[in-house]
Image 1 (tube, rainbow, N blue to C red):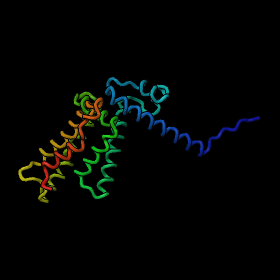
Image 2 (image 1 turned 30 degrees about the vertical axis):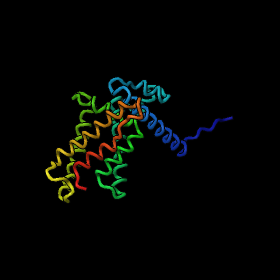
Image 3 (image 1 turned 45 degrees about the vertical axis):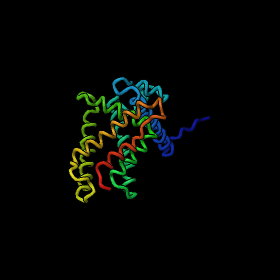
Image 4 (image 1 turned 180 degrees about the vertical axis):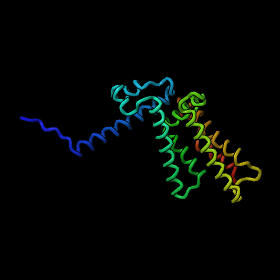
Length: 208
């Protein structure tokens, strides 16, 4: 009696699918752990334990903690980017899309915690995500300035408002409200409305 081993395209496809699923589980666990304890304190062994795989098994997908961090940050930006693009395609302007993103974040505490924790850690120049966050803020500020300049040209920005300052203040409101929202996790009834705060900031800038 012989044992038949399947090695055809179907088996390979199944292996690829399982590998992708494991990679997604690793990313989910890393998002949660990095958000809970930060990058430096988190360990790959703890991520592997949460997924239910061995440490070498995790290294098969991500050869280093820095590589895992890069994938986590890339995934977060990709998810947010797709959401904003969908809102823009639906006819909303960029500032509306930012408010809608903040609304969605209220249902994703792990993502909010991840961003707050890592962005604070990454202020250190030797942090592996330092360059990522520098570039991210440069990009987000530039996009916001461009949108506010367009609003100014259309007569929708209040007189005397500087687009650069307004863009930085708007982003500061978004990030600062995330901190207050996270700190009020144990008192849901008094948790601030992040989206409402952002809309109030935008209303102070715009004429309509």
